[in-house]
Amino acid sequence: AESLPYLMTMLDPSQLNERELKAFNLLASWNFHNDRDLSAPTYFTAFWNAFDELLWDEFMPENEKGLTAPDEYMTVSFIINHPDHPLADNQQTPERETVSDLVPMAVSKAVEKVHNWMEEKNTEPEWGVYKGTRLAHWIEPLEVLHVNNVSIGGDNHIVNATSKTHGASWRMVIAVGEPMEGWGIYPGGQSGNPGSPYYSNFTEKWADGEYYPLVFLNNQSSEHPSIISSVTIQPAK
Image 1: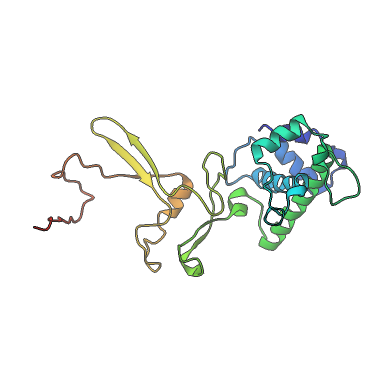
Image 2: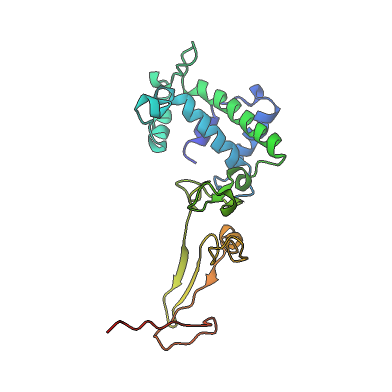
């Protein structure tokens, strides 16, 4: 919301091709929410990643240069306050670029990337599908243990902080009162057996932002219809 309107002033719609103009119009009307059924977050993420690489090419690749590129907060401050700074120049070209030169270059790269993805997957670039969140088992090499391509909104560092590989492992809402009530959910299921129907049965509700009511007992003698068995542990004498 802070950077995109400013950067879009550096684009001339008449100079964009058909695919780029479609992305431009989507971004121009975007509400800045990364909802899973929107395509604008897909184009923005692809654009921002391409722009970041063009802008901070002096630091790339970080593992070889031994330097860390500025974070998103500093990047936004830089492009707004110092758009003509020498660091904005992309060293891979003979010309001397400013931020306004990098924006259309980034748009072209981003739109091409998204288009190639669409052709490969034969689907529209909805954010939840494009992001393809993955619930990975700790035994990483065994693909059969993972739950792949979970369609969910959000992303890194924003509301519903769910990236491709990381997200909320436990969500809970508590209503403090008499009686106390609670609702919670986590991705996956209640069974660790990948052959069980309960291995990933919570996943869809978790992705939809839904919750299950929690059993809250006021004392050890409380009863609840959801309790089907109990275990009593006696300390050793």
